[in-house]
Length: 306
Image 1 (cartoon, one colour):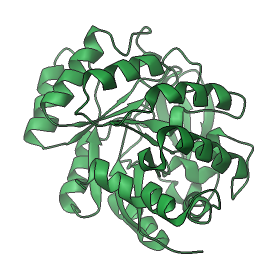
Image 2 (spheres, helix red, strand yellow):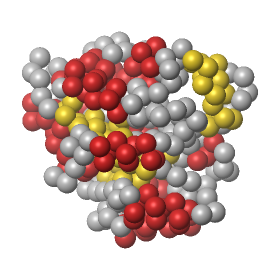
Image 3 (tube, one colour):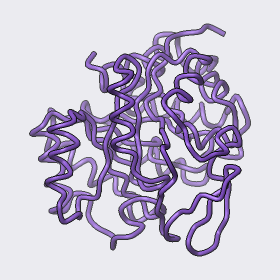
């Protein structure tokens, strides 16, 4: 299997678990487990991160072992916002990390938050996780992703030259609004949008996701593949059902608009980091040039300036 440079366009650091979801606040229990306020206990992190933190050095060790040159540090409600921690990692390792920031646009002092994170700390990426499970719609009523509040956010991103990342939740959820994302992208043709998880299909909803993906076959919209093998379960390595879906998606939006992402570290509960990269490295569904684009060049263009 040919080794190649890789950019992981969807990775997370965890200074400490402080998440929130539709089931309330998330409490760390130890041993990789966490508990929501409704009492549900589940495995949040793999046992290798049993203390509940994932440091920049932890991420770099895994990246170096697997041939990953750079990573984009995303975040959201699931394990709790890690804004300062991620920006500090970017400052410490500027050749390895780009940090996205995330916040609640309904925060009363949202303008001050944006001023600090973006205008003072220099963040160039904003991620809006809006899902009903562990995003903005887990603790806000359902809202329009092209309504007044979100339009103001897109305008701000455009004015400040930011990459806008959207996690719109699972296919079919109330937060799953591809039409609204299309409207935003058409209104801001000079701005880069990235939609997480390839619209987050399961095997049952894959055809619906592919149909809606056609709405987002736009020059300024990219799609990352984070957690796709997990969402498409059951599908064991080398994930033939997942790679067949990615091939169909590439035929719709173009292989030059798909970004590799792992959703490290939570997806390591199901498989190794090596496997979450190697299923694409060895995929016969794509040419060598297409794999180079998906695994490296597209993320270089979107997040690292070419």
